[in-house]
Image (cartoon, rainbow over all chains, first blue to last red; front, side, top):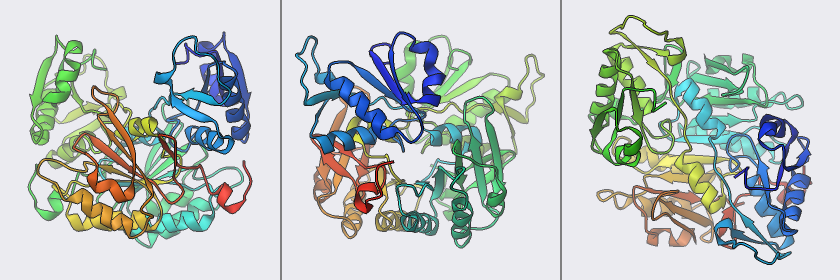
Length: 244
Length: 244
């Protein structure tokens, strides 16, 4: 995919990670909070006939850039068609872009694989960032997921400016879950200075987390085994259903 | 990974998909309901000093085989260490196995990429299979996820023997969500005879689904755009927070 395009747009940090692969490409690189401009630039290039990839870390469809392409095109009335319908030497059309979304390995998969197997049963994924979502909605989701005994994956647990959300989440979870519930903390999964730790829910407020951390809160069925954390596939043991 | 191991264990269908890559390997292939035996055989091989890969489709950590390795080792008191700690020519130890879990692209990511961008905000993942989980728990989770306005991903929506669960789930969801909520149906993502469709919640009971289908129920914020489905990143528009 990257080989085929003429331009690449992305957050500077991610562009730097793939720099050797894109030496001959036009680069549209912007900082952390410039997602909207970055996507608009990429769409503009595409409308002008320059193929452009937008890169994210993990999976571009999970808390990442794919949604913004649709938001932007919808707002500007730009038609989206699958790339498979694009034919060679097509006259360029300033109102259509051809899109292909290439799925990746999301942080929840990469992190889970390092922790053991925390996600082999139902789970809920919640971002603790209240920049674009009111905290009441986030709290309502945490509460619902905790009550219904989902394993819970937390994205964006803490940033330099957002410091209280994780501890607040811990309080909500402790109202429904044992203090010894295993909690997995994975920072910079599969990258330099990766860090993986299994702690308990009562110690979550002491964990070192940042914007590159994914947090995995066990369900009532999740267990720790040596340095690993896993969730049994079902309630077979508990309900004596027999193993099949 | 596959190149390095001496044996490969997996469900017959998946073994067939990778057959050309594993011609020189010992194969431990069993049918659909033989997961426990398959994992036990793989662990037994490892204990005897034969390296063995267990293959799943999608991500091995999401509703798949990784958990069963931990369940089995825990039940049999077999110690698990990370493969990175294994050294060459180590004397074999009948009580330790060295494990590496290789994450993959889960069906939720592959399906989302084909639908557009349904998972760019909080979501919950629920399996409708009540073989190992009592239906009351599944229902409680659907209810909680629906109330808290999560996008909901349904795994295992229907099998030849389990035919009523999806329609029951639809009823639960309709109590909390508009009948025109976009619903994505993806069957055999990225494989031969892939099928992708965006319908509405009121028509979910008519959708053609099977064990290779993943269903994506939009949140109240999810939208359909042309043949695509997406969820805006936040509530920026709704709450006039401004685009950052």
